[in-house]
Length: 173
Image 1: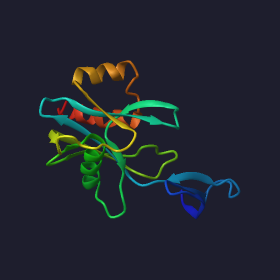
Image 2: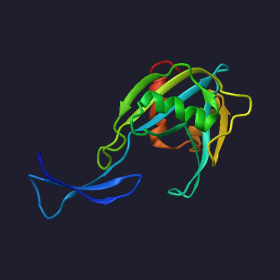
Image 3: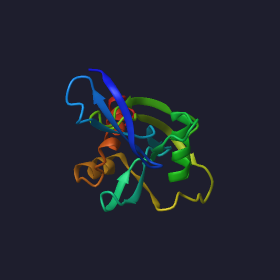
Image 4: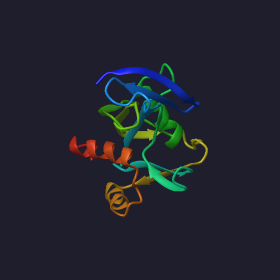
């Protein structure tokens, strides 16, 4: 299949809607996709082997969610730099090193970006009383508690379950 035409039909600071016309198919019925910045999530373990999560209100789903520290890449920033930055901004913890667990396609049917999944071990507080990103609450939990949050659907963000699974498959959790 070849794309014979590509038009940006709507643009916001967060995403673009792109209409793509395929060589095969109806030229009057383009395929629409969203262009977004790549996204990073990090599974971070403290020295006590606790997992760092964040709780925040998400207007899209109209409720508070439990998630991994995460965010979009800034222009000129590497995924590894983003993982370290988001960890500090959202949790106040820092990682001396991060390990790439995988690079995934978040939604092959609609999204053009990538999900970079990282792991950090033995993260430490960056300072005694860190100021977290506005609207974010740090949740430090045991690995057993995380499993319960997942089973009880309190931790139900599919894009954040993927890095957890990758960490488990790589014997990090």
